[in-house]
Structure formats: structure tokens, C-alpha cells
View 1 (tube, rainbow, N blue to C red):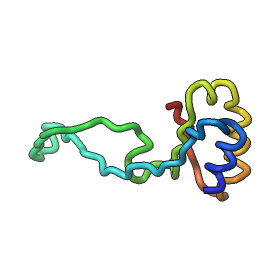
View 2 (tube, rainbow, N blue to C red):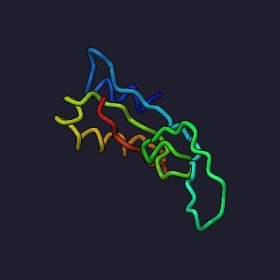
View 3 (cartoon, one colour):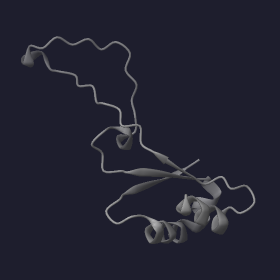
Length: 95
């Protein structure tokens, strides 16, 4: 909550559109080759971003409006690095 407040106070004080989200932690579906002799049922599959799968290296997502992100990307990155816990990784997303 401190990170979101600091980012909104500094970079989007009027509209406060910057949010912090977790990743989806979805499991990966694998498609086997015929040589592996395993049955494959594809069903309905949705492609996700690489950070939404479990065991990814991203711990949280920072959603920033596109115009704000383009103008202040270095300052936003420095602010996030100041407030985040050591060892946690993140990804900036333009909304």
C-alpha cells in the first residue's frame, strides 16, 4: 500500500490510476510430440504473458497509465526500487 500511495502521490496525483497487482500463477499446459506417445487433448487453451505463469521470475505487476510511464519511466523505476522489498521482482505494464 505504501508503494502504490507513493507512486500515485508523485506521478498521478489527480486521477490515482497506478495500481499494484499480483500475477495469475496459472499452470502451464504442455503439448507433446507424437514420438513421446502421450495422449493430447487440447480443448480450449488461452495464451498468457510469460509473467502470469507459476514459477515465473515476476513477483508483482505495476500498472501505470501509458502517458505517465512514457514520460517518467526512469523516475518510476527508481521509486519502485526504493520501496520494494529486497529480492522481489516486478514488471511495469502500460495501461
